[in-house]
Amino acid sequence: PIQACLFDLDGVLVDTAKYHFLAWKRLADELGFEFTEKDNERLKGVSRMASLDILLEVGNVQLDEASKIALAEKKNTWYVDYISSMDDSEILPGSLSFLKELKQYGIKVALGSASKNAMMILNNTNLVPYFDVIIDGTTTSNAKPDPEVFILGAKGVQVSPEYCVVFEDAEAGIEAATRAGMRSIGIGSQGTLTQAEHVVSSLAEMSVEKLQRIMTRH
Ligand code: BG6
Ligand code: MG
Image (cartoon, rainbow, N blue to C red; front, top):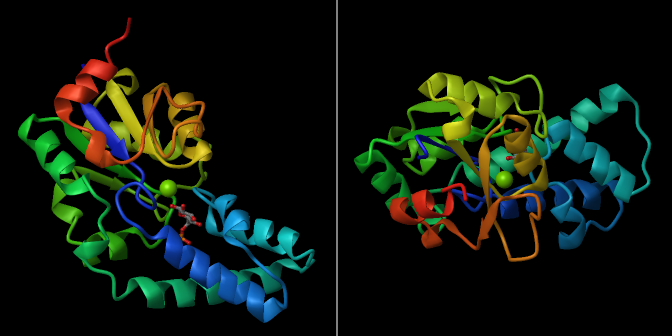
């Protein structure tokens, strides 16, 4: 049976994708090109600097490294401003009750996020107490699809990868889970996240009983 659940943050537990989009769009506006919600899909799960590279590719803009770092910092200042007024109303449906149920059953819970702002989001939404271990963009050096973030999470809760399941809304995150030797559940619409073992539309569809049932190997 599953002994640990590892959660991505943005787009799985909280609705922060809209703030990332607002901030990236504001940057594109300033640089003088259009950045659509469809373009934004490509940024899901991707690290801050890799996201900027995709954005600049969309706008066909070439810049040196120093200018890129300055732009990434600018975007982050806006993003932090947006998320600084977040509260627990922005926790996605089903997240809290599932986290509580996992605790009741003694299943370990870890965070595996690419974001360097994860702690601020967890603090503002009062989610910190639900985690046994928190691994984020400040504690990892290799971004998803590298498995580092989930391997560190599993080590932290002392559960072997085969008994771990990762919840992710991004292809890069599902690939990271697979490369870590873990099980995976995609959060998204059917037909997306094709590499995930199972896809559910949100954590509102999850319970411990269902988790153990769908994770039983046939
Ligand atoms: C991921 C998001 O969780 O974190 C990405 O899905 C984001 O969109 C990445 O770029 C890095 O976040 P931050 O907060 O460190 O810029
Ligand atoms: Mg995500």
